Image 1 (cartoon, rainbow, N blue to C red):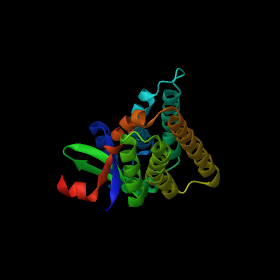
Image 2 (tube, one colour):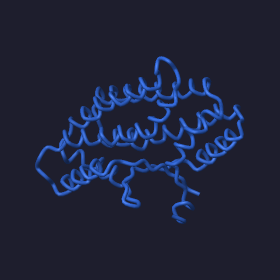
Image 3 (cartoon, rainbow, N blue to C red):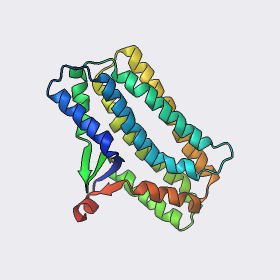
Length: 223
């Protein structure tokens, strides 16, 4: 059974992406790097907020550490996404935009960005979450580990692979790799910390929220 993650994007954000996709494919002579960079940043921030916004709100730490980390990730995305795209003309951007377009779907009038995840990993996550619902605290760390791996597969499909397709020069590529690594590790370390702070019952609500985004082949056939 195959699994995927589907993440909603706002209609107006999707429409801007579709418009840019069409203009690039019809050979529009206008330089589209700036609006494309801003649009991709909007898409990325909408995805980050819907997946991780709840985890920030559930945190009870007095220093609001989770919220600060999510805000830092959003600000970093807003800074580097347009900057990275700005190096290229339309022809160089086209393959990457077509790749991302192939990951978008429409369902019931809503628009989603999707990416596949390993079925063994998905089944492990689902199993850990079921054990957590029984109040078994021992399954919080492995559930968070599986969750982190699911997120990282998303980073690969939605960030690392598009970056690879653009074929940056060595200096810019190294800079972006550093940004991606630092930003993701900041988030992943926070997940580990939450596993030390909250018990299974407290974390179950967040996993229920995340699993809304998880689809499997059988579920899609039944919908």
